[in-house]
Amino acid sequence: MPLYVRAGSIIPYGPDIQYAAQSSDPIELRVYRGADAHFTLYEDENDNYDYEKGVYATIPFVWNEAEQTLTIGKRIGKFAGMMMDRTFHIVWVSPGHGAGIPNEEKPDTIVKYTGKAVTIGAAK
Picture 1: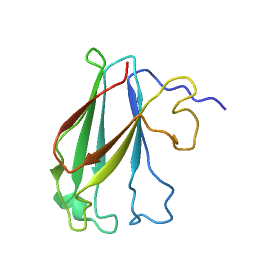
Picture 2: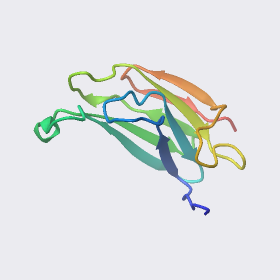
Picture 3: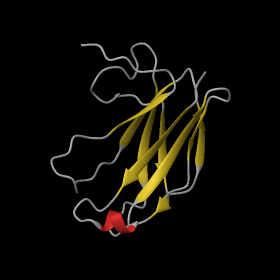
Picture 4: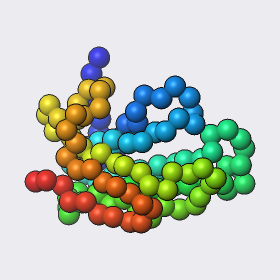
């Protein structure tokens, strides 16, 4: 069944995992160009209620359509056991590329993220 994705969407794809605390690295980010977009990745300890006390982290993502850039913002927050470094596979979705359920075998860009803001330009 086809799924409609609006232009200006950022959809994260993680690896198949068997339990909540299993590593979710790398994360594939599919960027559907055509309009500005934003998305926030939320992470916590997975096994308690400390998030209610503010023990969690977020990473903001912003797609700027006019500049054709994706900014992965500075990580906000922290928690015990948090992955300090992450790998993001960026996929600029186009016909036949980044479509369907399986992860894209050939991401357009691979970003090694350390918690600091980084901006990536899309291939035109």
